[in-house]
Image (cartoon, rainbow, N blue to C red):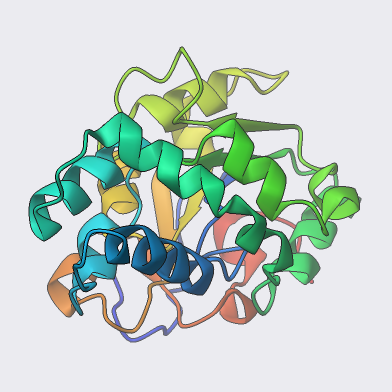
Length: 234
């Protein structure tokens, strides 16, 4: 069911609920995170590797810290790194919405399609990122924050976060009734393991190989056609 060119197929399994990732899909927060990692890593006289972004894309705060420490050979623990990152969280307050995000969110809400967010980020960073978008994100039924949610035992690519997110909908839908919207290969793997279809809107650096397990690949949320998944059309 994969299409790596961003073109549409005529039929996918109909769904009733939609679960969104946050960073890199709805919010253009990756640039801010790059600045934060640059600042923290720079304190130890190290430079940020060019491919660091792709190696940590979609992972939980702690898993990101572990990978960064290993890749950059930093003399601190993952928890210490996470604390350092929090010192620069003010940079996240100015993140912008990505193209098509607000249009799709409001369309689904107006048409009574239950929506939720499943993000690997923790509570503090989510609150910072949503600072200028509180009204829009209040429209979501709930937000699962993997790095600070006790029910999410393992982060992406494990399916935990999507299964937890699905069961918190009032209707408690089956996994096959949920559509996941993602930007990261680890999120695609997690959605597949949860038994959910997944639309991938990847960063250009994500390889064709990393895109092939998505149900559908798009260049932007602006290309998404809800009716392809049995949802009300725009």
